[in-house]
Image (cartoon, rainbow, N blue to C red; front, side):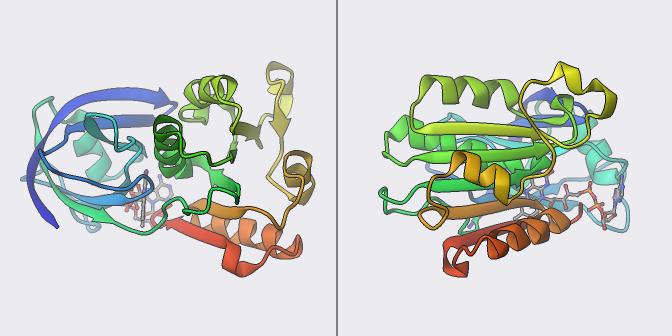
Length: 240
Ligand SMILES: Cc1cc2nc3c(=O)[nH]c(=O)nc-3n(C[C@H](O)[C@H](O)[C@H](O)COP(=O)(O)OP(=O)(O)OC[C@H]3O[C@@H](n4cnc5c(N)ncnc54)[C@H](O)[C@@H]3O)c2cc1C
């Protein structure tokens, strides 16, 4: 569905070089947690060969009264324009798209394997599941180089502490000498890490989300662990 222009309501830094952008939610607009939108900049002051359209998963949950995209701010024209956009700036929204959404059978746990900004649809799905009391058991493995780069780290830690059904496992792969400042998991997500938190690796539906290389690596981990490919869903963030 193509929608009218939506206004930027707020911008918030949520990790190093990472910002959330809140937009007004048009009356009657509905989406399912895990879906994404294409955003088109209108008359941007700067543009480049990649153009003025990007797809971003909704990091907002459908029950929230706004639409939110969260992205790494890189040195591209699109990101410059978005970063510097004044509150009230309008963008065109084409949405909702995608089927990276939570399965219906609540007996089957959900396990998310996310890398970097790939956490965005997981935030939406976890918050909506808690809000709707769907009954799903959800474990989120979230890989970043450092805690400073982990968007929604504090929020997901709090949500997991408040909800028995939610387990949040942030892991840091690039701490080097500063390892002493982090008490949680370190290193990439691998079969050994999965087994520490998931009793029966054949039970869950797996949701893998992040840059292409990360999605490929995680598929390798799940394949090697003997997970049925029918139980793996992926969302690849192209452009990273
Ligand atoms: C379904 C879906 C959902 C998505 N959801 C999100 C989301 O929630 N959040 C999000 O941030 N992104 C998301 N993406 C990716 C998003 O659409 C953009 O592709 C991404 O943000 C990169 O945009 P850009 O303007 O930074 O780079 P682009 O201008 O699109 O980059 C184009 C090319 O330049 C390279 N490049 C650009 N900058 C750098 C750099 N600094 N270092 C190295 N190479 C570089 C890229 O590798 C790429 O090949 C999603 C993509 C899809 C398909």
